Amino acid sequence: MCAISLLLATGNKGKQKELLSLLSDGPWRLYVPSEVEVDVQVEETGETYAANAYLKARAWARATGMWALADDTGLEVEALDGAPGLYSARFGPPDRPLKSFVERRAYLLQLLQPHPRPWRARFRCVVALVSPQGKALFSEGVLPGEIIPEERGEHGFGYDPLFYLPEQGRTLAELTLEEKNRVSHRARAIQALLPALEALARMGT
Image (tube, rainbow, N blue to C red; front, side, top):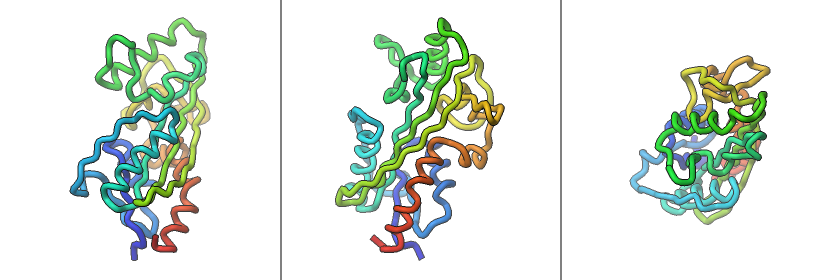
């Protein structure tokens, strides 16, 4: 029996697929935005990953009356002083907004060319779980790696084709969904949140 309904507050199909897999075994009924009869648009104006994750989850929780889970994730590249970071999803030159991650990946490599390799980087993911009343729980996951100068792999999304894991010998985009969900920043954040989520489900709140 499902003790709570949980909305995955993202329209990103790649994130939805990962979260549905990561949360498939639990006493909750999972929903994605296309399954509820509301349309919520959230402007990510927070100054931290946690703030943006909370803004998204809070808006969807309030609109649906369900617990909502959202994440905010950034790629932090050491040679670029942590950029693109909080602005990873809208990274680009200040005078020319980029329309796709293909363009954003090319722009990232352009900026990195003057810097010596290895281009060390990390993905940081902060997850917010928010009740309809605004109660919030947070967790974080970090995945270290490197940016490489050529895209590799057909899986994943975003910066995954450039994000290389030395211990795996592959990029995130070369991992299957099951493999990625064993090591990724998002998987680590969800794993950290699971005890609290399971406790909520047992209480039926």
